[in-house]
Length: 440
Image (cartoon, rainbow, N blue to C red):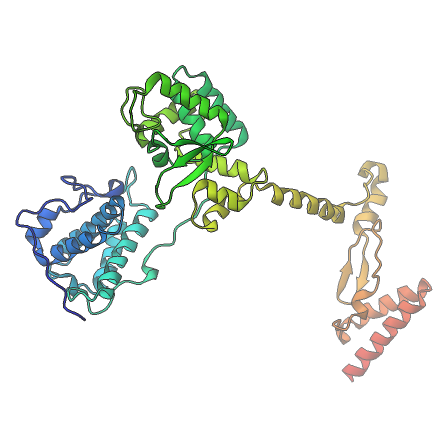
């Protein structure tokens, strides 16, 4: 490995850029973690390597990603401090420590639940594995001799379908928003429901976001989660609604398109509160703003919009992300299913049977007990059903019989002869001859 340049540790450790300063609690409410000040004091070399790594990824990743990595590394460092005090550097971490960390992490309390969720475990372990992979690839001398983690260390996560409102619930929500006296409520619900914006994109819309391209209005969505901006066609009704709101509540020169009514910037928490107040008025359960994004995508795909157009509208980088919506109430699937069902139902339909009391006890008993001999059992086909393959089993090349079935074959032969069925009688004569020959 190449020798890495040492980074001087600050004399008074401050928060890692993008990390939560003064808040030792874990991500998603998991148990409190060690602070960097504690780790620097107890394991200075271990902490220095981890903080150097955070400094490097801070140059290329978003602050939120750096914060999440910060929490994952502090979680692992806290485990080592508690369960493996002999480990003083990252290079000393072995597979045994990883195998101890996994159950330790799984036993930690989660947010509003006694144990951390599978998603939290997958994130923590995946982030930690990437830490080891990267410092190994970068040739850091602080890296362990071999990467101690593997893809199989990450728990498999469930992939539920996106939660979306059905058409009736979406209409209820929109009616409740129209009935609310606050214009901001109607603007928030309608824009989210008709554009499919992520909540962060919604709160980040700039004052000049509505533009005229060609003959129609478009909404310019700034760079967001996937680092790309895009344009969305904007319903004229939404344009009028936004104009009305801005005329009443937005002071001149305000940089945001839709701040709160007091002129302060909207955030995901205020948007979620607005949405759930409307949902409660509509008689709906708690909703996350992302549900409206899923709702628009589901409505679009089930009304014939192409996957490529939906992906462009939602800002998806890959069609794999959009294909999830194709599994929700897909009209094409439903239409084809019911077309096939009609044909399948025809296979099961039978002539309508008369009630048992009309047949009488004797005829009903005969109908129940109807059967005919087979070479190794009976056919219980009701007499009302015709069969075009009366002797198909006996004529099949895979049919086998033996001397033990001779009494049954004789009975079948005699039954055919008594009914004048020459072909059947000859068939069973040949089977009897064959079994006699094989037995001898």
